Image: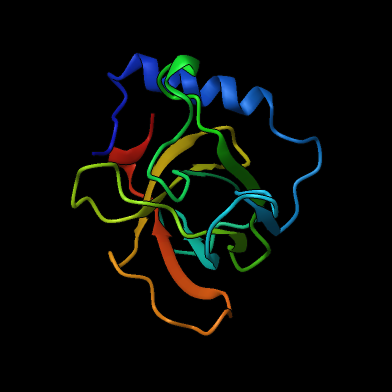
Length: 159
Protein backbone atom coordinates (compact mmCIF):
# COMPACT_ATOMS: atom_id res chain seq x y z
CA UNK A 1 0.00 0.00 0.00
CA UNK A 2 1.19 3.50 -0.78
CA UNK A 3 1.46 5.81 2.20
CA UNK A 4 0.10 9.31 1.74
CA UNK A 5 0.79 12.61 3.48
CA UNK A 6 -1.48 11.88 6.45
CA UNK A 7 0.83 9.00 7.46
CA UNK A 8 3.01 11.01 9.83
CA UNK A 9 4.99 7.96 11.01
CA UNK A 10 5.97 7.22 7.40
CA UNK A 11 6.98 10.86 6.82
CA UNK A 12 9.12 10.79 9.98
CA UNK A 13 10.78 7.61 8.64
CA UNK A 14 11.52 9.31 5.30
CA UNK A 15 12.93 12.36 7.09
CA UNK A 16 15.13 10.17 9.35
CA UNK A 17 16.44 8.31 6.30
CA UNK A 18 17.23 11.56 4.46
CA UNK A 19 19.40 12.71 7.35
CA UNK A 20 21.57 9.68 6.53
CA UNK A 21 21.80 10.44 2.81
CA UNK A 22 25.43 10.48 1.67
CA UNK A 23 26.88 13.90 0.90
CA UNK A 24 27.64 12.86 -2.67
CA UNK A 25 25.11 10.86 -4.70
CA UNK A 26 25.84 9.47 -8.19
CA UNK A 27 23.54 8.32 -11.02
CA UNK A 28 24.27 4.69 -10.07
CA UNK A 29 23.85 3.48 -6.53
CA UNK A 30 23.24 0.44 -4.34
CA UNK A 31 20.23 -0.48 -2.25
CA UNK A 32 21.43 -3.80 -0.80
CA UNK A 33 25.13 -4.05 -0.02
CA UNK A 34 27.17 -6.53 -2.04
CA UNK A 35 27.29 -8.77 1.04
CA UNK A 36 23.47 -9.09 1.26
CA UNK A 37 22.27 -12.62 0.44
CA UNK A 38 19.96 -12.84 -2.57
CA UNK A 39 19.72 -12.84 -6.33
CA UNK A 40 21.24 -9.76 -8.00
CA UNK A 41 19.01 -7.34 -9.88
CA UNK A 42 19.77 -4.11 -11.74
CA UNK A 43 16.96 -1.52 -11.83
CA UNK A 44 17.21 1.18 -14.48
CA UNK A 45 14.78 4.05 -14.24
CA UNK A 46 13.80 7.48 -15.42
CA UNK A 47 12.01 10.24 -13.53
CA UNK A 48 9.54 12.41 -15.45
CA UNK A 49 8.44 15.64 -13.79
CA UNK A 50 4.93 17.07 -13.51
CA UNK A 51 5.23 18.45 -17.04
CA UNK A 52 6.23 15.03 -18.43
CA UNK A 53 9.80 16.12 -19.18
CA UNK A 54 12.83 14.27 -17.76
CA UNK A 55 13.58 15.45 -14.21
CA UNK A 56 17.34 16.12 -14.08
CA UNK A 57 19.29 16.33 -10.80
CA UNK A 58 16.48 14.66 -8.86
CA UNK A 59 17.50 12.56 -5.86
CA UNK A 60 15.75 9.20 -5.87
CA UNK A 61 15.50 7.33 -2.57
CA UNK A 62 14.68 3.63 -2.82
CA UNK A 63 13.99 0.99 -0.18
CA UNK A 64 12.97 -2.64 -0.23
CA UNK A 65 12.69 -5.83 1.76
CA UNK A 66 15.41 -8.45 2.08
CA UNK A 67 15.01 -11.80 0.30
CA UNK A 68 12.88 -13.00 3.24
CA UNK A 69 10.39 -10.15 2.78
CA UNK A 70 11.39 -8.06 5.80
CA UNK A 71 12.29 -4.35 5.78
CA UNK A 72 14.22 -4.50 9.05
CA UNK A 73 14.31 -6.24 12.42
CA UNK A 74 11.02 -5.69 14.26
CA UNK A 75 12.79 -4.11 17.25
CA UNK A 76 13.99 -1.26 15.01
CA UNK A 77 10.40 -0.07 14.64
CA UNK A 78 8.29 0.82 11.61
CA UNK A 79 9.78 2.66 8.63
CA UNK A 80 13.38 1.78 9.52
CA UNK A 81 14.30 0.38 6.14
CA UNK A 82 17.56 -1.56 6.33
CA UNK A 83 18.02 -1.93 2.55
CA UNK A 84 17.92 1.55 1.07
CA UNK A 85 19.85 3.74 -1.30
CA UNK A 86 20.04 7.04 -3.13
CA UNK A 87 20.89 8.13 -6.64
CA UNK A 88 20.74 11.45 -8.51
CA UNK A 89 19.25 11.51 -11.99
CA UNK A 90 21.31 12.59 -14.99
CA UNK A 91 20.30 15.26 -17.53
CA UNK A 92 17.76 12.81 -19.02
CA UNK A 93 16.24 11.94 -15.64
CA UNK A 94 17.86 8.49 -15.70
CA UNK A 95 19.31 6.45 -12.83
CA UNK A 96 20.44 2.91 -11.97
CA UNK A 97 20.22 0.90 -8.75
CA UNK A 98 22.07 -2.35 -8.10
CA UNK A 99 20.53 -4.53 -5.41
CA UNK A 100 19.09 -7.96 -4.69
CA UNK A 101 15.65 -9.23 -5.62
CA UNK A 102 13.35 -8.32 -2.71
CA UNK A 103 11.17 -10.99 -1.14
CA UNK A 104 7.40 -11.00 -0.82
CA UNK A 105 6.07 -10.15 2.64
CA UNK A 106 6.06 -13.36 4.71
CA UNK A 107 2.84 -15.34 4.38
CA UNK A 108 1.42 -13.18 1.59
CA UNK A 109 1.11 -13.21 -2.19
CA UNK A 110 2.14 -9.55 -2.34
CA UNK A 111 4.54 -9.17 -5.29
CA UNK A 112 8.17 -8.39 -4.47
CA UNK A 113 8.70 -4.66 -4.97
CA UNK A 114 11.00 -1.66 -4.57
CA UNK A 115 9.64 1.70 -3.32
CA UNK A 116 10.78 5.06 -4.71
CA UNK A 117 10.61 8.64 -3.40
CA UNK A 118 11.78 11.59 -5.53
CA UNK A 119 13.31 14.79 -4.14
CA UNK A 120 13.36 17.53 -6.77
CA UNK A 121 16.06 20.24 -6.82
CA UNK A 122 13.47 22.78 -5.57
CA UNK A 123 13.04 20.74 -2.37
CA UNK A 124 9.64 19.26 -3.20
CA UNK A 125 9.21 15.54 -2.56
CA UNK A 126 6.97 12.95 -4.17
CA UNK A 127 5.88 9.38 -3.59
CA UNK A 128 7.21 8.11 -6.91
CA UNK A 129 5.67 4.64 -6.92
CA UNK A 130 7.07 1.16 -6.83
CA UNK A 131 8.55 -1.40 -9.15
CA UNK A 132 6.63 -4.67 -8.85
CA UNK A 133 8.39 -7.87 -9.83
CA UNK A 134 7.03 -11.29 -10.71
CA UNK A 135 6.60 -13.71 -7.81
CA UNK A 136 9.03 -16.15 -9.44
CA UNK A 137 12.46 -14.87 -10.43
CA UNK A 138 13.62 -15.72 -13.93
CA UNK A 139 16.37 -18.32 -14.30
CA UNK A 140 19.23 -16.21 -15.62
CA UNK A 141 22.00 -18.73 -14.95
CA UNK A 142 23.70 -16.47 -12.40
CA UNK A 143 23.43 -13.24 -14.39
CA UNK A 144 21.69 -10.27 -12.71
CA UNK A 145 18.01 -9.80 -13.42
CA UNK A 146 17.24 -6.57 -15.30
CA UNK A 147 14.24 -4.36 -14.54
CA UNK A 148 13.12 -0.95 -15.75
CA UNK A 149 10.70 1.64 -14.43
CA UNK A 150 9.51 5.11 -15.40
CA UNK A 151 8.56 7.24 -12.40
CA UNK A 152 5.95 9.76 -13.62
CA UNK A 153 5.45 12.39 -10.92
CA UNK A 154 1.94 13.69 -10.34
CA UNK A 155 0.74 16.58 -8.18
CA UNK A 156 -1.29 14.21 -5.96
CA UNK A 157 1.93 12.34 -5.01
CA UNK A 158 3.49 15.40 -3.37
CA UNK A 159 3.93 15.21 0.41
